[in-house]
Image (cartoon, rainbow, N blue to C red; front, side, top):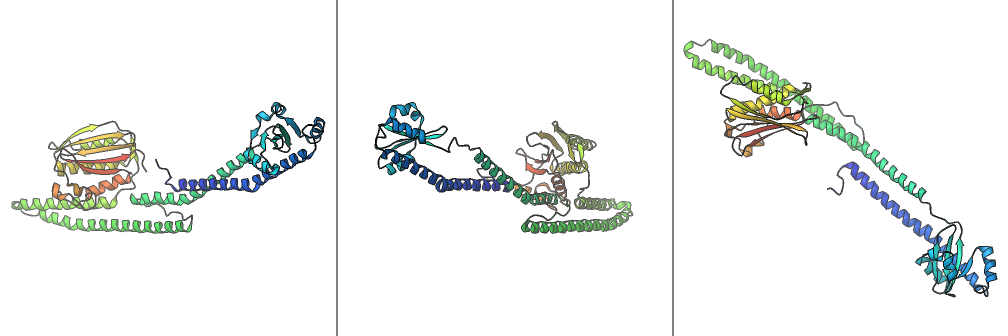
Length: 432
């Protein structure tokens, strides 16, 4: 579990929350030291002054009539301890800081307590008489109402988080668009130029990305045009060679067959060049079940009695895929398994509910591929020649990988522990 968020939004909200907490603590301390503490000191001074005034009157502690006159004029009561306990002293709360200051004012150890109510009452036991309690009402105070303060803090917190969310959203919106566009370019698709908005740095990055996307698109178009031109120019002399070969005498059929086989291999290589350059992206998504494509690809090879296929297909959900593209993936992997692996292969399919993706595995029983070469066989014009004696252009797996990548999936080759090679590809249920 991460203690700190990794997203820009989470980090910004955390920063705002920490700054808001620091601000509240500083505000609390400032109010305490510059407003509340001086007010309490002033109240303590007034209480001590009133006690001094009472104690300066002669016989105030014994004269009940004088005490009644003081009560009627100021509301101050002079009580012995028993009477004080009956009238609320027992429920009063002792305050050390008030007792300390008033003790200094009265010149001895005083006990100060506060009872809540309407109004608040300060109970003071002066050092001059340990059995006497002076109850002084503190007018203008009552139960503290923290609702306005709570609402103020809540509004400040909500506004701070909302402001941070709007700021980060405005900042991240161009980044998210840039992320989506970069993923599309990586899959061979070229989106419309991104809108340049946000900070100066984001505008500069977006402008550079748009320029890079245009450059890659132009290179792709030039490559396709060049590949198509070369393929077209090569087919003309190959056709003339084939026509000339057909005119050879019958006693040279072995020469004729060799030349025709070479011409067919060259035509196959040209077709792979065209397929790799074309990279059909305009094909619409269709709702298809992968098992149906596997069965169709298997039935197409039933005419060959030499090669056999065992199927181990589990129930798969329907999904939106480019039907022709995925069929080409299956054909390429099955052809490779027969051509470079063994005459018997196994095709399995399964559905991963947790990851919401379907998977197809094609296993042969051939020599496999050296581990150090597996990571490079998907690169164009790369083959595992040493292990599997392959021939051709080396574009079949590159085409396969591009089609799977276009679907947002992944294709993997791995040597089976019991021999042979396992080629598997995974397709997400929800296409990007």
